[in-house]
Amino acid sequence: MAKIIPFKAIRPTRDKAYLVSSMPANIYKKHLLEAKLESNPYTFLHVINPEFRADNKTQPNSVERFEKVKEKFDEFRTNGILIQDKKEHYYLYRQITPTNTYVGVIAGISVDDYLNGNIKIHEQTLTHREEIFKLYLNVCQFNAEPVLLTYQDNATVNNIINKYLNQRSEYEFCTTHKIKQDLWLIDNQDDIAAITKEFSTINSIYVADGHHRSTSSVLYAKGKRVENPSTSTNEPYNYFLAFFIAESELNIMEYNRTVSDLNGLTTSEFLEKITAYFSVELQQKRFTPTQKHHFSMFIDGKWYLLKAKKDSFDETNVVSSLDAQILSTNLLKPVLGIHDLKTDNRVGFIEGYKGSKALKKAVTKHNAKVAFGLFPVSIDELKHIADNNEIMPPKSTYIEPKMRSGLTIYSLAP
Image (cartoon, rainbow, N blue to C red; front, side, top):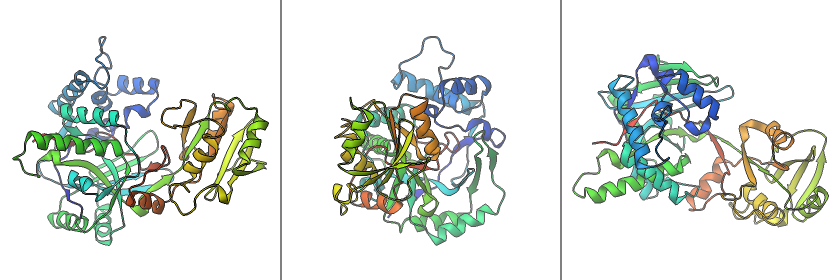
């Protein structure tokens, strides 16, 4: 049973919301990041990058750097760019892209739901990244970007959402990426109580995006509990910021692969070796796989369809039969000598929304020798893996929506 809570968000004033909210800093190319920081004094990127104009910069991911982040955050609050709601709300958020619409509820969720298994994961986290995020929370004491969680569609929650969609939103703006953003305050106490009650009946919630952020929030809360054993579980640090989106709203796309060399093989030798596990069919034009266990491949200016042979993987095991796992087990590892996707710098990843054009471009204009297109993982596969405490290979899914930073900030301070 999930325990979610309304909260008093720290958020931009209505007139500055479109100027404040931003994508995570690592999304921007360096010249674009510098241009945004130079031209927009309100962007939340100034909080994330507080030493943009500093000559003597602190070390990345250090206490000193995070103290600068907290100072800039406090400055934004002092200057009235960010204000805190006086009442607790849930927040309804809608994102309209050129191809999809996403709607869900922003709330706090208990770390105990993670600890007791109500929140389920499908991806391994890296210890050093967990510790970095935990240190960030210790110093900064706020969540600026919600973890993306998904749950089975709920009629009562959907009815409440639809009621607010018919009202004027608190925020309404469009970004330069042609993505429209809307935010509503769910302020009716009956609606708040109904949403809280409905989520209390949900036994399984799945992390779609934000595994490191959720894990580090749990580590942070556990540490605070050790420091303050007599405090109640209602303390803010016992929750973290989350965006809840129904399964039917979630968009799971593939994460495609590129490799910079053929491990010493010629193209003909490579093509011969992969026939041990795949049938290889030359194609006349660029294409995207349309079913499981089919892969596109671009090499030496030609497209190929790879079909995984039925006896080359265990169909009864969900992880083994994931296309990302099949490609790693039967091609990347034995033929190209790639044993760890996390550490081998010969491997690149391309988000599915960029399409097959990006695969061709990676080979013809960049440093890739070969590129592979995959078929996306289904929500049922993701849930099955999470329910059985199994883990997907790295970069198996690219999931939308991608949330913006600084739109609704959750304070961890008492």
